[in-house]
Length: 421
Ligand code: FHN
Image 1 (cartoon, rainbow, N blue to C red):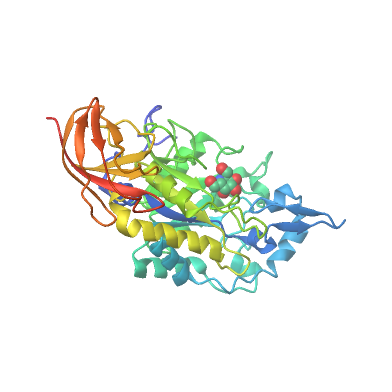
Image 2: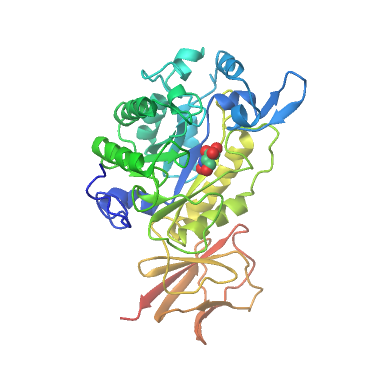
């Protein structure tokens, strides 16, 4: 039976996620840390087959490298991520300017990263690592003022009742709900729940609607992503574009774009193809200017430690945000100007924030094209505070900053505006 609110074509939620107080922190924060960490991390991205050949993958290594379950299960007995430091992890997110943190509690391999009582395919029962990292993260997140979220894969390669053709899928769904109950009731408030793998049969949209209802009943304030069912029946609070900065500001839902920091979600030691701090900042500024959120992934190694190149980039983003945060936090789609070729523009009330990627030569202008009329009463660069002359020009305004780019990553000009009544 579908919940009463789940009329086709409606975004099923107990309130309007665009305006609800429940989602305010999320809409203002714009930036979170995603963490893919699981038994797969123990492989460091490589599986040596019995014939000596090497197969490379990360969180999909079990399936894509066709590792037999007996071997994958045996790997668990060696998995001991004793370097995992929840305070350091949450501290890294905080230093990066990230307002929330979402960890894979169970990925498609079905392996629970907490001591679930529901089955024994979990980090407590199968490994020498006798700690509960979710409890440690909950404590650290609360202490440091970072919100905690959980990723949970509906698709499960391990549970026999979850497999295609299962005659007892309902038993799996019952266990899944029991696990979700643990996650939503044993670790304090869970700010965000990130489902995945909902596209795989035998999962159905109707199951999704029931699951969304179940979660709302247990945790009414939790913000849920749309990978619980499909559009119009059960689509949570926000959309989940992946590996992209969407060109349009909205598709009728809140949205959060998740991206990798290199080319994998889980740890792969050989993958050093890291995005630069400049790219990461520009993703964030572009996403915030389209009223979206950026969930940037890190992949701890087999010891549970986030690799230093990932930390370095997060630190650089945090440094940029310390001065330029107003272009991101509580800012969003302007509605007033056309996206310029030289950067992006966001808005917070009567301020516009122009994040300039291509700083003009001295005397040259940055043009702002107005989509609807507004007046500019002042402008300054956030780094250093230099005033920026602004003059009406054609269909908008010309900004003429002087001197070299104040910030090589992106220099932000703050404009005081009065929209026409
Ligand atoms: O298959 C997964 C993948 O491993 C990763 O977890 C991403 C993150 O959004 N989600 C799935 C693919 O969409």
